Image 1 (tube, rainbow, N blue to C red):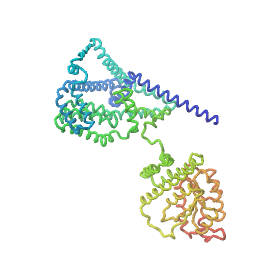
Image 2 (cartoon, rainbow, N blue to C red):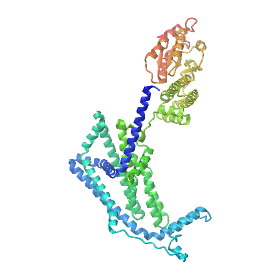
Image 3 (cartoon, rainbow, N blue to C red):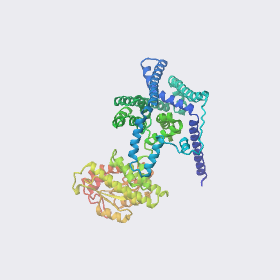
Image 4 (cartoon, rainbow, N blue to C red):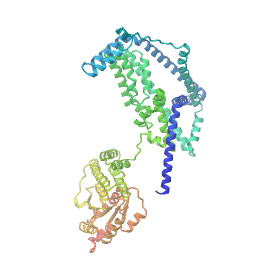
Length: 625
């Protein structure tokens, strides 16, 4: 192995190892120090939500400090009122739920009778056992079992109650931790709102790496977009919870504010949050109400409001999304919920959005943009070739269909099909594709090209039609093999059959046979298709032989891959006798179209057959002009 390649592989392995170690350490730190990171994440989230309100007050003449005080005070009052209402609802629910025990047993018994209709099945027996356990049936071991067996001494269970000190510690410790985190979060929010510009400048200094202007624009744009998006999301979720609360009050379901608050929180969980939020009120309605009307009304309220929000309100308010993919949202939700529990569940989407934006604007974190974003990571031409290399012609055809929805067939030929032939030939020459794979890709591209050509006909409509004598004759010649033959077929399909009479020569035709065909058919132009890399020597040989025998023949060479530019290769082809060299099918077609009037002005055979004088000196002079 070359020494440079070995060193490159070693450096790559060290980079991967270092990256893996850093990621593992970061995840461990996020979990171990969650008591610090959770308030920090909550503070960042609330800062993004409250910043637009602070800026709005500042634009109306209120100072920075008064604006922050007003906004934070209003947020605290709102949070306090909501917390008080929800807390009272929870306490009331836990106090009154046992009053519905008889109705709950009746509903459970009804469900048991539906499920275990066939008493002989094992599933029915399992349901009966579970029901007996939930209903408080006598246990197998215990006082009842001792009474059934008088010879067995009774079991005495001695329970020791914990001291009041232990009970106080068990209550005060979590409460003190929650209060401490809430206070820390509040202080962070206040200082982040007051020192917003200072924090922004520090981020620019940290991430700019000499590109201050670009980083400044990126940070400002990102801050505005995320702030607006999270504020709109917060208001929409709050509105969703309020409408749910009002709807449940109209339906007559108890504890409507509690179910509305649950719906508000669950809307932060992408895709499945509303479905989770509907479970508690639906189960409560099923358990404590008579009949089915209330349960059905609750489900209809949630599902109808969710459909209205997803299809009409959210697209109108959100506009263009921030670019998170669906899979990334779900995986991120599970990841943050695993690290930070319920708080991570709520903050999963905002935190993942911040990571995505970081990946878009910071070079060292670009992998986050690839992993989390919804933008295609493969260009259409790369994805098309990749599916053909995997022998998945169906998905490759779907890619072409999507491109045809927004691009013309001519662009699809030049930007997808021809570059695929170029890539396949290059990989075959490098030994990365076998001859069988190359044949499969070529044949698949030719089949798909037929569908693109049919789409072109349907899009253009039926041609008016022209007499055969008015059409200019063109001979399309593949330079070497089936890859070039597929390319010249593409070109033939692009020419309007009402204006051009195109003949495609078979691949691997002998040069002598090709010259005889030109002498017999007398085309107005010959187009040689040569997909790079390769075929240059044989193309130059064809140009020289054709130019020697037919000096007045219009000779065009297509090096169709879209990447080559006018340079030494093209100059060699011109020196060999080519009148024109193009890098795209569209360029070759445009060149012939410019000569269309000249071809139609004189007889079809506007060149010498190589054995005597030209058939028409007037036509030859016109063409050479």
